[in-house]
Image: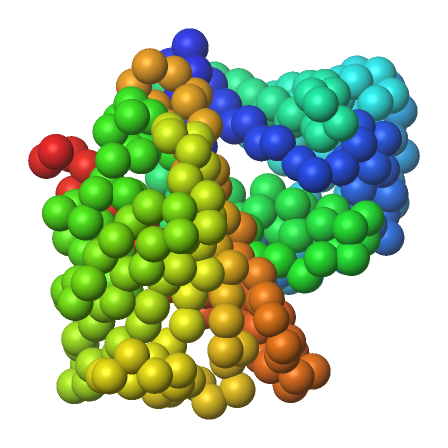
Length: 316
């Protein structure tokens, strides 16, 4: 989450590949919301959901560790397809934890969602920000993107976002300049080295990543580079000579993946990076299933790289 103006507020924004009506329905329909609400790995049981001004939503989130999290939402304002305002966490015996305002707007056939969480104090906002990050709460909005793509575009995709404290041009540079990329790209516990790096449309990079007692090799082929907003490339695993291979620890992982990296300027000093990962080329059903089941591991892997990027960007 990125801080916008007031110190007691948390702000998040996303662009979804769906109409405003489709995004709204994903929020208000109990069957649809059960497919994406909560951090990755959580499931949801709704006891009641009455989305109208004065209505409420009573539900329980079930963590992957078996812990249940009862929740209560009181809707204060419901303006269909435009705006939701609600208090979160309040029951008869305690006040709400924070107030949420969600605004939906159409942008070139897609939907911009802007969410503001207002807490009593700046200190409470800081603690909530830490809790959300530790719990993986931002993956909720990534799961919404995945749900919308699958339901309305028929596309199975993995999505992850992170906002960094740097300007968009610097962020673009550390993703596209070989002198920067391998300082942070490799997963936690690994170091990366370019054998060849030709990062341009039609270009190719050949690299190795070493850690945990073994070395992996791979190639990236660049499809689109639009400075400073977008980077698209495909990836394959290879052997040390550059011949097509498979993930050394996951033989049913798909042969070829497509990575789309979008850079969005949230302010002059903050940039949100959005990763979309999908299977391309020929792949068996088993390989597609491996991809879908592997999303928690993908989250862990990209989170590790993002953590390294966050540390690195502070030094650039």
